[in-house]
Length: 313
Image 1 (tube, one colour):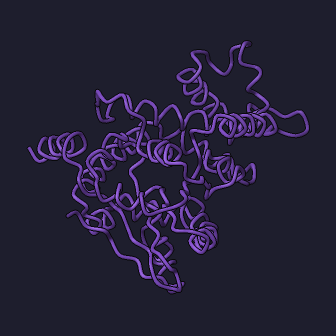
Image 2 (tube, rainbow, N blue to C red; image 1 turned 60 degrees about the vertical axis):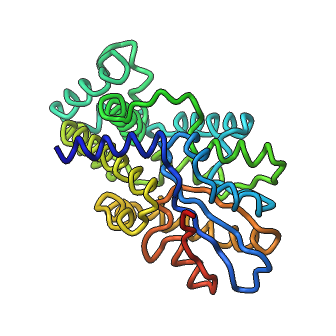
């Protein structure tokens, strides 16, 4: 019953009555005018902005707009796609080795099954020889994407909305209003976000073996993450940032993935400070970056700014 109530509330708030959000005002520290930041749930549809007058008001006060990545810039996205593909192609094993040389017979059999789920053919098939010389990290990337795609298909929220997702919608609106667009991430960091980070072959093997050996558990964890994202959406619609910040999933994520949060937040801070000195700025990025001692809120306050949540009127 509790699950049914939560899902019902999610559908009501996410579709019709989202009139609050994780919007924060940044002031002080010699800023002449305040800037703002909106922490988003990336899976929210942009139509929720039609019911968020506080964002519209803050948006009108800002002369420029910064986001993690301008996903509406086709050339930029093509460049990123090409860079990711080039990175994948470069991740081959040395000395003529193949993935088959690194795994035991049992591990190869498991990998066979997982590759078939992704490509429709077993790794041992001759038509799949192009994969054999890749480093383990490429297999982890491909199989991990399959797990999340399947979890989304089975457990993701159903919506009839045809609008773009919230981050993209914010960018489109900013461009329509003639605002200068900036990015907080660079291409190198976006490639790392896909999972292509510097690891030894031994570390890569450990990750791959854990993935293929505990596939069902990983599927369950992915499903739980989808459910947690639904709960996150409910808190967003209620502007309940405190409850959101206490969620086990987000606390675990911010601790377990330093690059995703701590490293990127540290890189973003000087960019944000420079932008705010130039003009009042709207920053839009994932709400997880707001959390904890290494989160953007704490970093800004430590730097001398006043950060306060904007409440619904």
